[in-house]
Image (cartoon, rainbow, N blue to C red; front, side, top):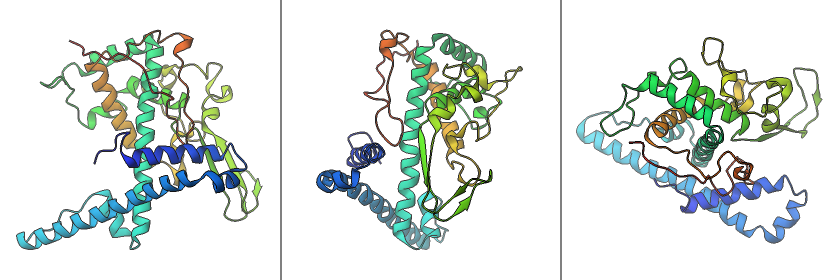
Length: 312
């Protein structure tokens, strides 16, 4: 399934994210959307249609697998995420919405976190050089014949890649893929610290601001410094969700946290050992500073300009 930026779903999803993000800046959005909301309606229709198509194709595949297994007298292999959703929920609208939720939660956030990590490394050559040397020392014997690294899940555990994971988490701290969150109380509720919230109360917290708070991260809270995630022996030390809420916490902890760590680690290891990817005109100058585009997530406005060359 090709979901590049030219795909109708990708364009519709990006437009809807942008417009929904603008709702928080426009208290009159119900009025303005009444007159100018047709494009948003079309985008939402495209997104929902894509979700229904996911379920339809999955049902067709399941039927085919069941038929073939009957002929071959074997148990059908139905172990994908969409299979689990279909078996869990009888309402296929819920299945489609859940599939879209998983897709949207990982599609943009993972790509954006990787982009901002490369950006941070481009602006901090010393951190990049230290990471390259660390990767070379740890994975010099893992290179496959095609030039990529031959890695296992065990290789990507925190004990084996402390500086790499620290670099990724430091980029997540400064550039959280979900910069702010909003919740609404569905009933009267008293929070653990005694604050009472009546029904329909709206709570907004800015993860971007929390991650840059000097009270939590010190006077250099706005500085990119991967070493803050390492202890005196160079081991990676995570933060609790109250200090670092990028992946939420408790019952609402992000289901894709480990997947994001593994994917980002794998990509960074291969990119930094295969490409001289952080060559850019005046990457360390103020004029190169990138801004976030308006959205529910944190896309980089106009992308990341850079030169890429293969390391020989």
